[in-house]
Length: 232
Image (cartoon, rainbow, N blue to C red; front, side, top):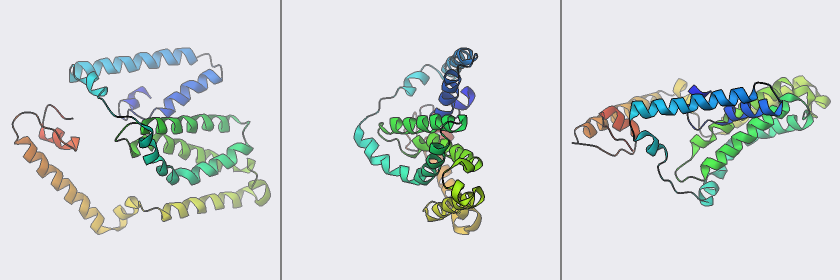
């Protein structure tokens, strides 16, 4: 999990839920896991500071504006995962005494908290939702497996309840306006646009590379391809 944190640094709900669950269950390895994970994280940060130079840590602490207005501007994004949250909650309430319901509640709660906390920062948008989406994906999977504990399944049967769950999620996916995965397979124009975007990025990187000294790039990948030492 620590190694994964250096790949995507703002996915924190899974490690936090794992550590918290050890303490909740009074697991004998809770303290050991916390200390080893903390030591590994510190060692990783120290290694990055050595590899990337003294500016690594100050760049992590770059100033950013914070405010409730940023949260309100992003809160509408929660509509995309609202159906999954409702399906999970309908099952979890009925099966609330089970470890599965308690753990997924902890995981989803931490994912939602991390999402809203990051939204306080100016310029933070969809990336803050990854934790919550992953947690709800796990939660709906658990609900699907244990659906017989739900109120509806006891009345119409687990099989029919699972069918309704799949149908509702499929309708929600189709109703969304983000169909990139399907377009990648079925839309020739969409696939061609990706190659065009890649070509434009490489051309822009060539122009940036020709600029003497450091450069500032809105898209950081352009600066990296151009070989610039400073990319902010």
